[in-house]
Image 1 (tube, one colour):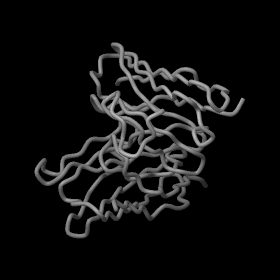
Image 2: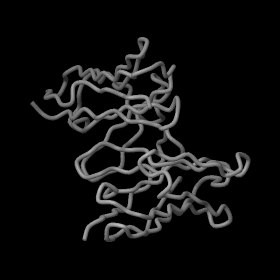
Image 3: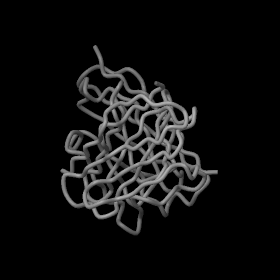
Image 4: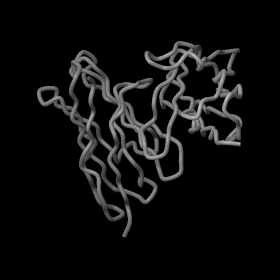
Length: 117
Length: 107
């Protein structure tokens, strides 16, 4: 069974940093691209970024709203994905999901991030 | 960026009704369109990909179609478990984008 489990969310002050993790199991993690998607309270999902696999040089794509502030990385040996978030703003408040490459049936349960003073 | 415009934003329906939700892309996205269902407090669940292909395990009362830049999600006979919010999402080009959602509630 495919599982994606996010962790690392919490309360952070504006301008602060946070690192989210996503642990994968049940599939060959190293073969797959992974996306992060977030959903602000009462809003629809918003794609945040994608990290590709080793065959594609772990290349990344980012939404304009996070480019330059968020960084995706992965450790295939640990079957883990990381989202480093910096210069956080109140607009970044959301539940953050890791997803096995949209369109996808494989979403994590999400981890909440609240940016507030 | 490709904008995905869903209509209606909300609707009330009864069990057994036929429900149609429209998603219009701001430019050609070929068949790169997926549909999701989301219930409160849960992650979205994938229903359809490539505009019309049903994800494994999704009931056959759900169907998808395409006409140019317009995409349709149809529920042939609404069931109690179908009351939820539905989103479309394009995968034709970055940034990947979602529609604004259609909330289906009980009439």
